[in-house]
Image: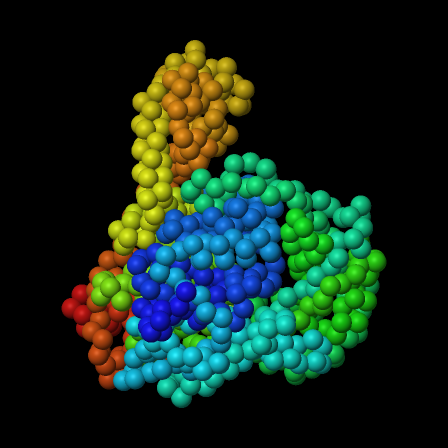
Amino acid sequence: MLDKNFEYDIIVVGAGHAGCEAALASAQMGCKTLLLTMDINRIAQMSCNPAIGGIAKGQIVREIDALNGGMGRITDSTSIQFRMLNKSKGPAMWSPRSQSDRKKYIEQWVKELAATPNLHIWQDTATELIIKDKKVNGIKTNIGVVFHSKCIILTCGTFLNGLMHFGQAQIAGGRISEPASTGITEQLKSKGFITGRMKTGTPCRIDKRSIDFSELEEQKGDGDWHKFSFLSTTQNLKQMSCWITQTNKTTHEILRNDLSKSPLYNGQITSIGPRYCPSIETKIVTFADKDSHLLFLEPEGVDSNEYYLNGFSSSLPFDTQIKAIHTIKGLKNAVLYRPGYAIEYDYFDPQQLHHTLETKIIDNLFFAGQINGTTGYEEAAGQGLIAGINAALRVREEEPFILRRDEAYIGVLIDDLINKGVDEPYRMFTSRAEHRILLRQDNADERLTPKAINIGLASKERTETFKNKSTEKKELLEAIKQIYFTPKESDSFLASKGYQSSKHKLSAAELISRPDIGIQDVIELSPEMKTLYERLTMKDEVAEAAEIEIKYEGYIKRECISAEKLRRLEHILIPDNFDYESLQSLSTEARQKLTRVRPKSIGQASRISGVSPNDISVLLILMGR
């Protein structure tokens, strides 16, 4: 129900993944929040593939959950397949990923938001911001309603002047069958904001009844205990497989012959698309020497006949798409629900933001999600959460909430955006995080849940769950370090693992630290440890976290020392009005970029693209260091 005076603490514009997390966080922190969406039935819509997580993205979802966000819990409850990627590598690379039921994912988010105190929803389109004295204090909507608020968070996704491309056909819209949003970009440009255009795309949807699954390779889920949320969540839906196929020379020939009809190659689209999620047209041009590309058929839900053709994003005409798809193994008789298409949309240079995601030009105005030049549900949700938290803290007149690069992937994401800007849609990878051994998916709650508790965001259930897990992990680690095995007790076990017998006692920790020995092996060796393990309420999660900490103890300690050295630069502050242009000892590029970004510290300055170590030395001297 709307506030009768249309007065709110915070208004969130857009109810995609960023908007949902922003609204949920601000409302949970006690702020009267309005979530404005074009269509209540498409809240948290998975516009592209029906999956959450993946390489580095899965770590972000775990972090969102650790901060009491909704994405992890709702993904678990709507999951139809869960996999832990990169298990053959070290735990810093492990990344959870889940296929979700697209329809039920939306339903669960709607229930979550509707049940959240302080949160109201209004179906409409924002057309203008109300700005006075460089401070935002309200919005006007398409149907003439005026809402006032202390803070506004824009999470507009692909809707700002969105333009869809279906071959030569161009249709204004932010998503298929949904209109574009106009007015906001033009207004903000007039206030001095720098904006640009980006492009993304999505594949066709195929009727499963027309797919020959006998010709495809099946990819099942893990079927184990792993999940996204640190809370007690369940996967109640039927588990489904994905299926693998690939393109071939004939597919590529058909696509190549019609490249002149592609908006990407005939001049129709001029904006930049995501490098790491290219269209099939881009793949056959960029990798012209490859005869095939892997494709994944992903189910859209337990009650749906739709399958998503992952890896075949395209904006070619429909007849070209269907002709090419029919040459692919298993898809000879494929029937499409709708073709793939590309979409261009407005974004704003993220270097115009503070680390809180508040804009530097207009006070109390926050940006989150694709409006900042990112791509991906998870990157958007992480930004939305941080924007929602900081807007609430601004309303409460409290200190801002900023995550460092050694504290969270979300911190790396935002720091990269603010310091480096974007020249293509930004996607998170583990390689972007220099401290990734510290930012594992298993310890996201240890890193972030105490922060959520401190700012009043963590629920009672989350607080209790975290404290119980911490106690149980500490108890297990202490037992592991105190339990020893005599040579007689360990010889046969070591021999079974290919190790020579030991001439002295070995602690449980010494055994677990070896590559081929896991904590479950040691639990079976020790009746005392087995008794302790059976008492744990979060057996698997606690045991895995303890094992990782023991195996990688040396690496973790070294990384902590490295992070602390870099952290010292964050404490050397730079005055807000510092005159970089007067310093001829700085390079021209450094003067320009430092003036534009206006870093808060030497540490932040050192991460700006184009600022060299020599420029940092100059600044350190001027700061008396």
